Structure formats: C-alpha cells, structure tokens
Length: 488
Ligand code: BG6
Image (cartoon, rainbow, N blue to C red):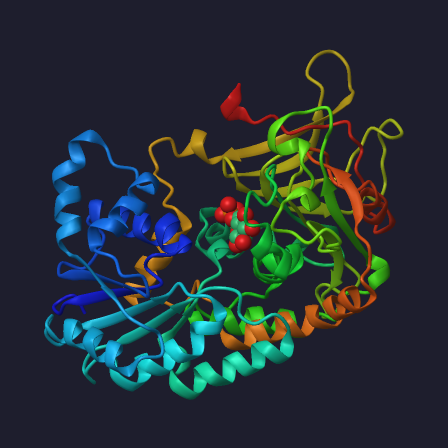
C-alpha cells in the first residue's frame, strides 16, 4: 500500500520510551530507506513543546554518523509535534486536521502511554482520528497489558470494543529478535530435530534471561511489576511457546499464533514449591551501582518484597511434552548479560565408554548477546587415546554470517506494522493464557508477602535455583564451558 502517505503518530512523544526507542528506531528506518516513500511522523503529548525540543531530548539516543547530517535534516523535516490532552476531543480533532492535511493517509498510532491514559486516548482515536475506509488504521501497544487476569480482561474488552484484532499490534520485543525468529526455521526447516523434540528425548528446557544491571532509576516503575511481570510472563513465555509448539500449517500469523496458544492452554500455573524468588542486595566489596541493593534505590519502598529474580517450573501437559520441566529463570543484577534457550537431552541409555565420561547433549539457542546456536556433543579427544571429550557443533552467527546486519528488534517490528504482518505480535488469547498461568501464582506471592531470597549484585542469583534445577533432573556438570569463538 505504498502509493499513499503513511503517518506514524507517537502518543507520549515526550516520554522515555519515545526518546530512547521509538524516535531512534524511526530514524534508523528512515536512514536505511526502509519506510514507504511518503511517510510522516507526528508526535503528540501534553507538554507544551516544539519539535526542536523533542529532538534535543532524542538526539543523545540516536546514532548519527558525521556524513548523515543532511539526512538527519530531512528526517527532521517530516516530523511534527503537537501538544494536547488525551481526553480532549478538541485536541484530537486538531490532530485529525494535521492528518487530513496529508491526504487520505494510512495511520499508525503508537501508544507510548502510561496505562491510566490508555482508555481515554484510544477512545479519542476511535472517535475522531480513524483513517478513511480505503486506508488502514493500526494501533501499537506495549506492556503492561494489565497486571493480572482481571485487569487484562477489562483492558482487552475495552480495546476490542473499539478495534478489531487485525488493527492491534501488541509488542513483545523478544519476538523481533533474530534468534527468536530463527527458532521456527531451525525447528521446521531441518529434518533432524523434530523426531527428538519430545519427552522421549528431552530431559528439560531452561529458558534464561540474565542482566548484569539493577533497576537503574526505574525502581519505582519496576516495583509495581516485579521481574515476573516484567520479563517472565511475557518474554520468557513467548520463547517457551515457540520452542514447544507443533509445526503450524503455514507461516501465516494466525496459523502460528494458533499453535502458540495451543501450547499455552496446556500449561497449569506453577506450584509455589517449584518457584525461587530473589531480590538483590549490594555487594559491599565493590563500588558504584553494584554496591547498592534493590532496596537502596530511593524510588523503591524500604519494605518492598518485589522479586528481581525469579525461577519457575512449568509443564506443558500434552502428548509431546508431558513430564518435561520447562524452567524459566530471569533476574537483574546478575553476573552476566545473557538470554538463551537450553534444551538438555536425556542420558545416553547404555554408556559403553569410561564411567562418567559421557555427558548429556545440549542444544543451545543463544538469543543475545552474540547470537549463536550450538550443540554440546561428545567427541574423541584427538590423539592416541580413546578418551571422550565434551565439545560443540557451533554456529556462531558473527563468524558464519560476517557481513550480515542484525536489525534491532524494534526496527523489524515497526516495519512489520507498516507491512501489516502480525506474525511477530501477541494475539489477545495468548495474553489471556499468559495471565491465566501467572495470576494465581502472583496472587499467592503478593498476598503472602513472600520474602524473596537475598542475592548479591553480580552473583548467579540465589543458590536455591541450582537446587531447584537439580531436583528437576537438569544436570550441570561444570566440566564444560562454551567458548565464544568470536572472542578467540
Ligand atoms: C524489557 C524489560 O521488556 O526488557 C526490561 O522491561 C528489560 O526490564 C528489557 O531490561 C530487556 O530487553 P533486552 O532487549 O535488552 O533483552
């Protein structure tokens, strides 16, 4: 539909998300000529500002090379800003006038807004800002999509009373990551994995998200949600559903999302005994951020029991996966930055080699940083001996695809919205299931004020996590470490 103008409207243009993510992403897409030919941007927020003020705020987050100054000017020229109130019909009528001035244009609204403004703003869009019939209107929204099953259901009913599902683009930015998109091709484009992708061969699946930073001033926001709502209920559960799903009948958004929902429907809420919660404390032997614990953040209440680390074991009770633990683990202020999916296979049934020398196979999708897929395998130690050695079949992306550019998740996802592809966006029933799974357990944690286990900033998290994984038959031998080949 590139023969008509496209207007991308950022509601909440003066906020954090717009400054750090949306404007810098739009700039990259513009610079790389990935947008439809006639595209304009309109920022909208309450603050009485000029576009030049917005740019001042945004520029520190934009990567601009010295020879791109002219291009940057052209980007500025297609941007406008207007201030207005989110519940004012008059202001949205003015916004509509700006839109009408671009002719019969397609309209994409990015709602970078706090949840309490969500309802009035969408009502105004629906009331006075919809595109002409022959053009599209699309709405992009981000988490939090409610904070439990009830609030999500209310929000969802509100949205669906105004916009049909095909107009709604719910972002989970993990779906825009290179390795996450690769999962499907890897699983369904190779013959060899599907036959072992089940409870006869897989012993456990560990899906991890680790960050070496604390809440860094976002403590106030974070304390309202905690790591389970911030990362586990969305990003990690999305990864789980793609790892566990059956092959969709096509790559259409609906076929894929149908398979993901089928997986989620087979998951019961985790049992409290299969959960580990942690909260970081400062490491007094260090200086700077890592010396401070979560409770030292002035925006966090002194008695907060909000977890900054969580691990939970889920089971997908279907024919393929019954009995296989899916261990989700996420935490802030840990020892490293890493997101990965680790599939551990069962023991070789009859080990004819030296006792103890055969270790389990593992297939690892390293989502970030330094994308890689590697398979832990046993091999003969080279030389005269007949000893076994743990090694790996390694597909490290930056070695194999040296010139490839890996777009940022947001770049890919925003292009998908222009193109009308919902494959990498979350459907309402997926979110319903996600909240169904996590709400009872969140309620239990919150009503019991369960005290999280303290762990030191920069550590691997509570050691109780290792006890948990061990009790679910995850074997960590400690004898092997993947060598990041790009660093050799
Ligand atoms: C966000 C969370 O959704 O994801 C943050 O709110 C987290 O707390 C971030 O830091 C991680 O994203 P990425 O792309 O850096 O792994």
